[in-house]
Length: 302
Length: 123
Image 1: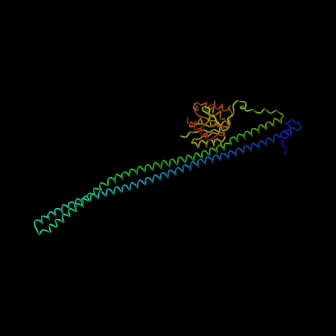
Image 2: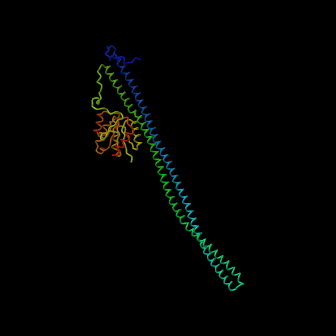
Image 3: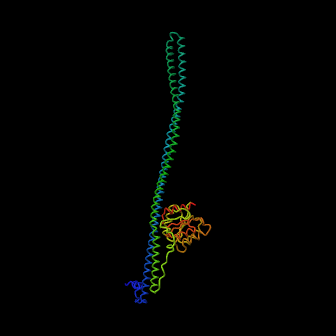
């Protein structure tokens, strides 16, 4: 197919107007109109496709950020659960220690009760010693009253006295032992009580440390992860912004085609095309603000 | 409470990208596709803390929208940030005179936009 602009080209270059304008002009206009429509349709299609794809990318990006947030939330929940388990462990440890201390306390109490019982036994043994003394005195009196025939009573009196002394000494030793046991028990009780306090304080400390450590861990790791995801998604956002500029460029192409068609039409009619419009800022002082730059009017430059 | 930002742009991709950047930073987003819709949204929604606005839009362009929003006394303190591909000094000057607080030329840096939004909504 002969490209219709060739005829127009010759005319535009000042070639003799030997081409029958009446037959060429409608063909040129028609061809130009169809070309313009095709280009416009392709431009529109390209713009729509790009827009659709970019929106899809944006939705994916948004989903990535949401997923990252969910993952971090799950991670935080797992850390919190671990902290709760640690709390439970500390509580169980303290309860077990409390049980041991209570058992120790019970043992001390039963030893004291036993000591009380032994003291009663010592008193009874003391009475037995006194009774033996009386027996010994009586035996000696009987021995003296009967005379030489009472020698057997004298022997009984001696043995009874020895028995009394033995009983008394045994009672004294038991008594001393009981006193020693009694003296030794209060420090044991104090230590048990002190251990109880320390166990409680230790438990509180463990709980506090576990909680704060887990919170620090969760907050720290979660915060860092979400910051990283946001940084990456913001970078991706910058890369996705070309669609707006592309749409404007495609719009400019469409407008340029319109201008071209209008000028060709004017040329075919043998009329002068108007001068190219000049952008106002090409005459004004000052530089354009570059892409990506920003100014704040009321304060400092960003 | 989260601050609310109105994003006015005829490009759905730009609205999405601005919304994504600001939502990540904890802002609530309301969108409008042209100046007229933006104007109506500001009039109907008193909880808007800031406006991010394009310049070249159909129906009513961004600069006219800013002028009409700022003409109402109740909107004097509402910060309006222009976000556009335009960088001509005459347009920037007009936006400043209309009452906009700043001008960012696309493509925007998401972190910069978030910081600016935080700064402007702190007032």
